[in-house]
Length: 275
Image (cartoon, rainbow, N blue to C red; front, side):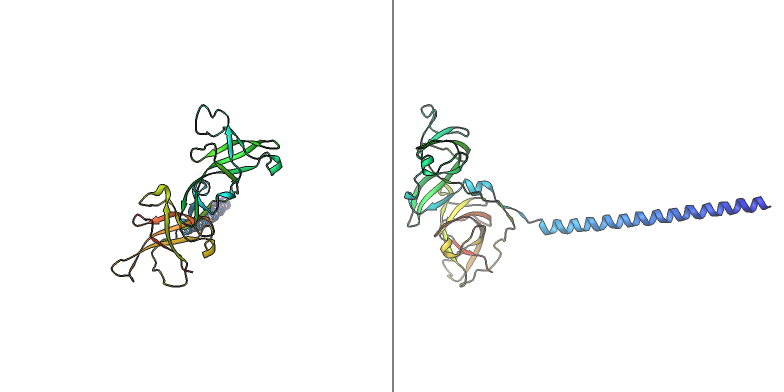
């Protein structure tokens, strides 16, 4: 009888131990599930917060687009000759060419320059200037220097000019869109004066020039809205696009179209986003 009581007590003890362990394991699993649920919820919130954040300005926008140069005289460093120029007209990435200046003018090995092609004159603003590539000084002598074509955005030729290369970071952000109503006062206003390759229609991702610049308070990375005014009803306007500034000069700015609901054109009106 005594042995039976001991055996029964032992079974009850072991059963209680197993129940206790199962209870603890269940609590741990439940806690882990809650933690995973909270973590997933946080990830969803982050995804919602940053879903519209993307690169607004790319490296190509910064170093392969165009801007307005006020005076040609500002450019005095040029490509004067190149190796194998008798074989072909355009230079390729990796090619070596020679510059009109050297060490006595401040050139040093390793310096990086932006290559420019001067284009047509844009009214009274200055000369349209295309960024065609980047070059690095490989061997600077006293009166001239040899450089290597590091990156080409377009064909590079003898006679093109160079200016010091200034590194700019790409910009992440959100397209502010154009679902707003323009105001008559308080914001800088201008218009589109030139489109890339003089296209009649300008779409998302295209470059253009506007007649707003540093003198109007325009800054790099700023977004501008585009609108049309009705010919029949002068008070009626239609919002049609959103731009971002990728290069700022005194009286003009280079912009990229972030979004639009119809093709933009030269002459379309532009103004800054409201504060």
